[in-house]
Image 1 (tube, rainbow, N blue to C red):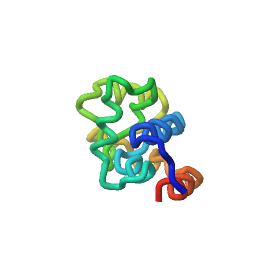
Image 2: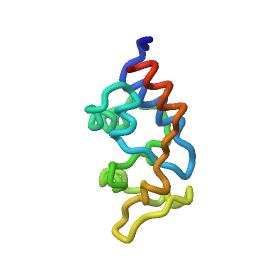
Image 3: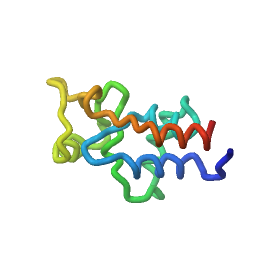
Image 4: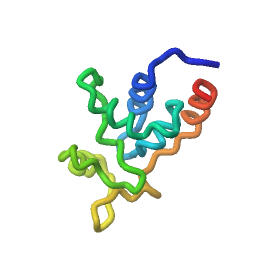
Length: 111
C-alpha cells in the first residue's frame, strides 16, 4: 500500500495525533512517516513557514532534550503535565508516546 502524501504532510499527520502530556522524538516521527533516517527533515518540516498550526512543542530529541530554537517548549510541556529530569530533559520512559495503532498504520502505508 502506498500513500502519495508528501513526507512533510505525513509528519504533520503524526504530530497532529500526539496527545497532550505526551511527546515523540524526531526519529520516531521520521520512522512513522516512512524514512527512519530523516529525523532532521522532521525539524525542517516543523520550521517551514507553510507548516500548519500544530503542537510542535511535543516533539523532542531522542534523549528528551528540547530544541534550543524553541524557547517556550519547556513551559508548554510543563503546562501539559510533562515532567523533566534535573538537567531539563523530558522523562522519556514516562512521557514518550508509543501508539501501536499509529505505528501499524504507518507500517502499512509507508513500509
